[in-house]
Image: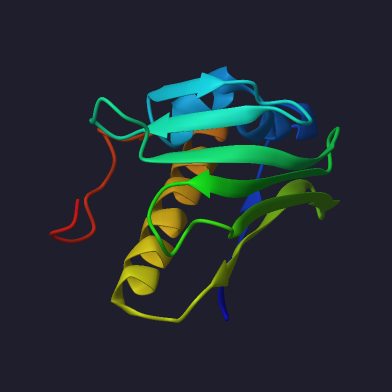
Length: 148
């Protein structure tokens, strides 16, 4: 198994950063403009990237106010199904540190590398927006390769 891990510090209040991960409105700001479902504990989220069907559906498997959100992928790319996406937040040196992991990949293949880069790009979108420089969700994001 392989895991994607990223760490980003954001100079913004904890409740603002947590809201980006824990609400539909927040997720639409930095990841993709079309998100449906319930973002709280036990909810299910559907993320769209231009198609009529969701590109991925996530079950909210863990939720601790101000500290943690974890999703388990229940529908999406084969390498994603059954994996978890985890956002752990902590306050350190005047910023909120987001420790992100996308765990449970079957292997570190080319799609794994693509998704790692895309996650980094979207986490930087969250940082940029929270720090006043503007969010860049899909489809307004920086394209990092020919997979879009």
